[in-house]
Image (cartoon, rainbow over all chains, first blue to last red; front, side, top):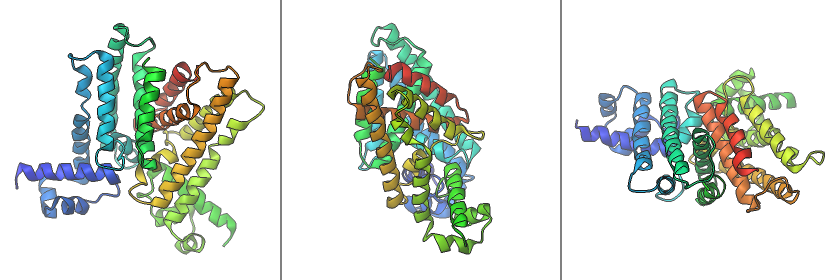
Amino acid sequence: MSAGTRDLILDTALELFHMNGYTATGVTDITRAAGVPKGSFYHFFDSKETLAVETVNRYAERTQVGILRDPSRSPLERIRTHIDLMISLATAGGSPRGCLLGTFSTEMPSQSDSITLVVNARLDAWTDQLALTIAEASEAGEISTHSDPRRMAGFIVAGLEGAFARAKVSRSRKPLDDFRESLFEYVLN
Amino acid sequence: MSAGTRDLILDTALELFHMNGYTATGVTDITRAAGVPKGSFYHFFDSKETLAVETVNRYAERTQVGILRDPSRSPLERIRTHIDLMISLATAGGSPRGCLLGTFSTEMPSQSDSITLVVNARLDAWTDQLALTIAEASEAGEISTHSDPRRMAGFIVAGLEGAFARAKVSRSRKPLDDFRESLFEYVLN
């Protein structure tokens, strides 16, 4: 069995967890959707839990937090591009799926410590990077507010996660478009 | 079997859904935790799904959105009190449990249309009431911003729901305290 099979299982699991959540997705659902025998799952992964930790890391890499460090754009332009990318990722292919980190934030604390810890670490790293970029935007005079950048970054991440959840439950991207407009009106101004 | 038993099943289910989510909570978990025979569940409820719709309504009543209409306080004071009450409700008894509406927002769309619809309707009603109170605060000169109150209310509800999720995954109330501080600094000022 090839590394390609392992990758296919990971991507399929990420898709199913993102859409349906962790508890509602069984190992059989994953192998069936990936079109691989169930045995190949346990060849590559110890458990659904260790696989889920890997999907969180893979998802976090796709959110392209790195764009917040892109030296070819101004700090505020980097934040705009990053927010737009996050919204595209959540709304690609029809009904908004929300954010995997947000979905797992409410689902995992009662189910798995290891998944809870990796989700929290990824949210922290994202918030830290956003805080650095906010501080740069403030120094560059692109935003007028000079309060604690870490607290402001936490407020933005919370708002975006809440807007993802609202888009998912209302089956509409309007909460995300409204969030974007409000963010630049109230906070990043 | 008494109405008290029905009420006990409802309250127990609400507690378990709030803590562990819908999919991870079976009918047997509910009847065992309530200390009632499994048969009594189906005497009162058609299914776990119809029960969950009722728990959403019960939870929404407890969030005391009505306080946003309290004529004995100024509009901004009502918003402050409401936010504080929501935070108390989510942090009562140890580790933050988040908000049932937020948890169900990401979990239910792939599982149940009827639960998704009631969660969305309750979030809409909450946002509408908050928008009315924001408009009153704006008219009374308690806040300086005069942009669309409905969009501002949506931004606040999203931020609060995101902060609930972050408090749950970080097992800390700090995201909620930070949210409160940022809200009155950036938005309701």
